[in-house]
Length: 360
Image (tube, rainbow, N blue to C red):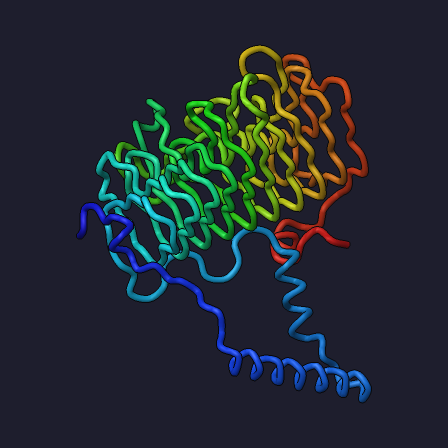
């Protein structure tokens, strides 16, 4: 297996513009389909079956379709990306070496349909802008031991303009996603249609034993008050498994803190000790600004833990299932000025919501 593959030797797929003849054929095809649809409508022929399935998928949570490698992936131990381009269908197995699996230092990079596994360091570290990580599977980044917790994150670094889409990230001893451990400037991160999770290990791995649950949070934010406020949007995600017994006290799916502005929308959280841990504060790190819209919490000890007089906390239409023990825990100050919590509702059963959304 190749120990290190430089970006110049990775196959980069560059899209090209179709020739005029091809575009003309596409136009004719579209026109024919449009006329056929009009005819079906006039005759009363049903035409909504496919779009109905698409609408259903659009309302679902977490990853959709194929995630991870395609057929016959290229196998590597680790990868350093120093040039822009598309890097895809790579199986990166660190074989438990103390190496970052993928380090991205270039701008304008897409990492797609890859699997990253088996490291005692971070899986992906980003120091660049205009990055897309799409349909990747990341798992078994395990540092330290269950009783001696050490961070190995799924995706971390200091990105600007980053999209993490349709990725499955789980079984890491730090956070599935954390920006930034060094509290350097980062901004404009979208986490969309991802499944971020942990749970008991099915087998011994690195310094961990079968049945032990690694990890801290699905997403953890860090920033200095002296830096520009970092922005993140979390959308259509499924976050689960941050529950006790675990490596730390106060396990939370979302640990949103420091000088950040985070919007969480249309996401589902279940089987967590704390679904939303939301932290205000002043001083060196500042406090988070958080807006939660159209989300639901199931099977958790605490839905919302508000701390340090977090200001301008806006919660609209949060579903709280009957098996959630506490809706709101105010700890160390609770919510501060500008707090709103409107239109709470009881969500549909968990499996139904995962499959078809929260829409009534």
